[in-house]
Length: 86
Image (cartoon, rainbow, N blue to C red; front, side, top):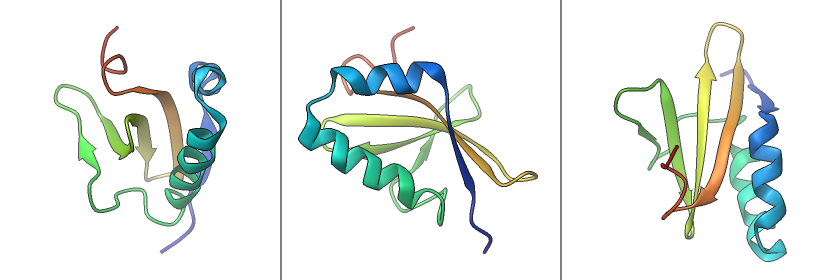
């Protein structure tokens, strides 16, 4: 399988600023792993959207997959109690 390119939405980059450094390291490892397998075990497609999510501790990573151009775009990163709110 080809390796996907990672892109970050501006919001996702901002979201990482409020996360403790030890958690940021783990979150980034999980995001980098999406390059090789954008649909890992435990990834769930969100209802009503073309967005997927993966868990990393108490945090959730929301992302879109564009198979035709081999891109994974990270949309939002946040604590599980806040990430699904608009």
